[in-house]
Image (cartoon, rainbow, N blue to C red; front, top):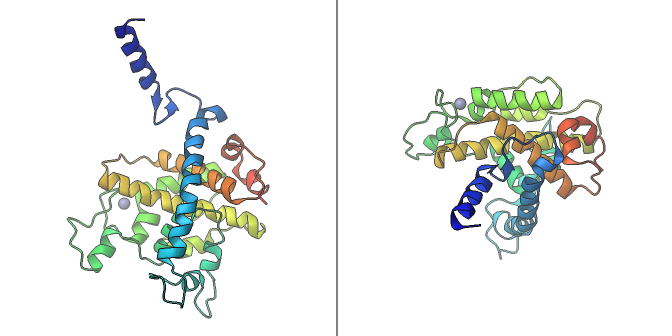
Length: 260
Ligand SMILES: [Zn+2]
């Protein structure tokens, strides 16, 4: 094989894979996602230890001995307000999701996420305050995670996948509290709410990609990444996961019932 043929072969190999996925492959087949899953699992194993160390040593501190800088007491972060009729955080931190995604969800629920409206409110000069995803309305937390046209498409795709109907409340906090499966066990609801965490954290990641890395808005990509992320979280955080990624995509609710 001469150098021209080798070059041509290399171009062909590059052209059939985009982001590690074979172009024209069937996304309903488990083998189609194997490369992505390998990469996700590799990253999870690498980051898990780092994130736990970050939480313990820096972000949440160790408490009263004064040895560590604590941005927020872990006990306070976990605790629901006294007399809270509908406890939120005790439900949030039980979700089968990675700490980084849970932290993003917590910031959304507390309205501490750095949307353009929140940045302006804190005196940061921003070029414009329009939503980074639709460009039509001011980028408040309520808009970005509940009302935005793009976000609405993501939620619709996710509920289509789950084969369920749901009303999205404009307030993310109410939305989270309403996001539960009636008559299901606590463990099943921990997985169910992990989907909420997955959607919110992936919308925020997508918004940052579009805003800072010239990414293209793509609701289907967000929904697909939610499927991949939540499946990998369950895989990492459950004692027994007896279903494949293919099963998860085709029958998510049946799979949730199998989580221990
Ligand atoms: Zn928008």
